[in-house]
Amino acid sequence: MKNTVHFTLALVVCFMMLSSVGFAQDDEGHIYVVSTFKSVIPEGGSADERDNLLMELIEAQKSNKKVLSSVTLRHHWGSDFRDWVFITEYKSMADFAEAEKINQKLNKKKWKDDDERAEFFRKLGKYFSEHSDEIYRELPKFSQKKQ
Image (tube, rainbow, N blue to C red; front, side):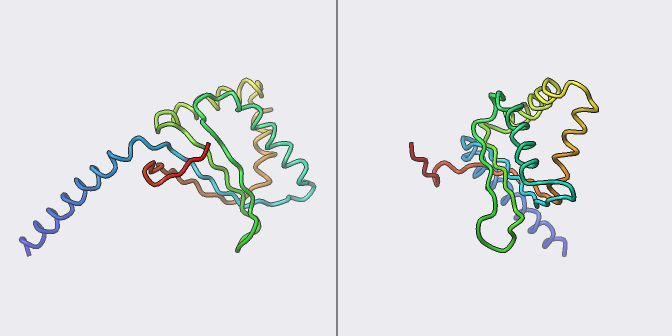
């Protein structure tokens, strides 16, 4: 039994070492944050109001230099027509962390009053229910980017 535990532990350590070597080679790839939301139109709300609120947020945060690109996708075909996907590209995890701080500052600049800012995000939030967030690292050797 003791030998089995040691053998298993040795396998785990070897796997972790090999995995870290693989990840180190991928460090050059950009970071992509993928957030998927379920959209809803609340009572008294409208698609126009939702779109205007989203545009207002995008406008407020567009000067964030840590964001390399962003794209918004809306469900087109498949199992759940409520899906909205927001993908944001960053050069690194450090840039992602810094971008979050910058966005907070930009939000405070746009909506100076705490209550006003909270009300804006409450209004926007009523258009989206459950969501998930994932962070992906690009694997450049498998990517194709056309200019």
